[in-house]
Image (cartoon, rainbow, N blue to C red; front, top):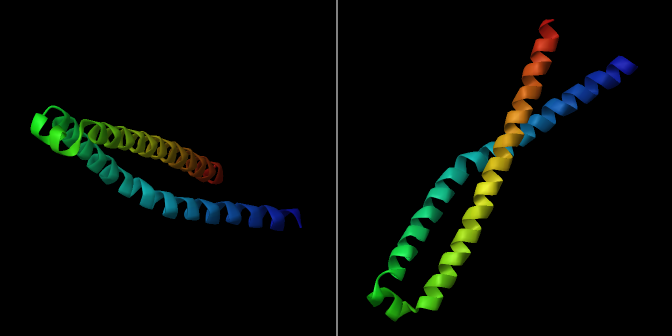
Length: 104
């Protein structure tokens, strides 16, 4: 009975890892593009802050607020990316250890 429970627990771990990889792989694939787009938008707004014609039309406060919001969003995306990257790396290490344990 203990072997059956161990077997089921290991397979549940595998299903959990597969689910983790599917969801987080999608996020890891999309986050670099999202980060790049945010960086581009931030660069554009920073450029607008140096152009009197732009900030006089739009308003320096509006540009500064938008810039701050984008920087906060960028920080969140970067944190999410690095956290997912660490999680996937840890999961990969567990898989490698399991494989090595099976071969021994």
